[in-house]
Length: 267
Image 1 (cartoon, one colour):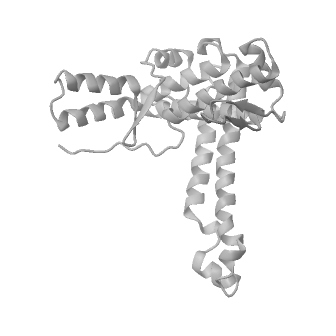
Image 2 (cartoon, one colour; image 1 turned 45 degrees about the vertical axis):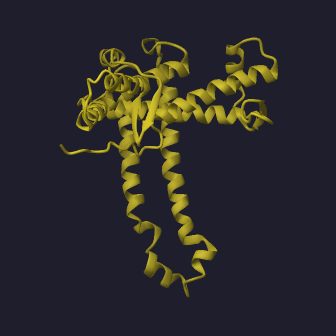
Image 3 (tube, helix red, strand yellow; image 1 turned 180 degrees about the vertical axis):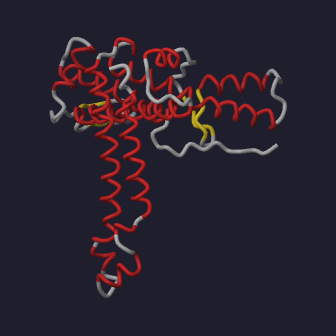
């Protein structure tokens, strides 16, 4: 039996987004407490209506002894929501490509909604597995239904085979939670808002990668080891020669194009 480790390399994986959703809830809770707002919804509305507000929140749970402060909470709330939307849309696009769907329809959304929903995830040696599936693994071992490492690895393979579908279902859940309504109640304006924020995240990641790589060519301390610019370019090439950025540019353009048609049949 060939044993393959299914390592998730995407930093925006379900377990990370689970933490992001928890952070959003905490910011809403602390905002309501700090501003003396009467309800969860009023705190959430305040954050939506004041994204540039310089809001500082005291959180006694950050450190057990002294507590801590959350600075720029309003802008952090806004960015966390964008990240969560990006994950959800990317998961749906990946699933559509796997299933050969050109775009999502309400019928397809219904099929995705009928898939098993897992909202708690574990990182098991680099593989992201729903917490309930991990608990099932333990139970199967205790009951001796799984009696060898081969059985355990077959279980890992099963989880990986279903990972894309489970992630797509979780992506729908994330969108429903962000907008506080069922997916079949989403309006055209909501889909426009999702596309706008996800495009912004996609473009930002590409632009940030370019800026980071550009430092290799503009940093004074890096440049000082070369006699002149010509020698540096002979060794490093120019930023236009970086294969990674060319690949990332193409992937970003492809993703943005896929995003533009993803919801075209249901808006």
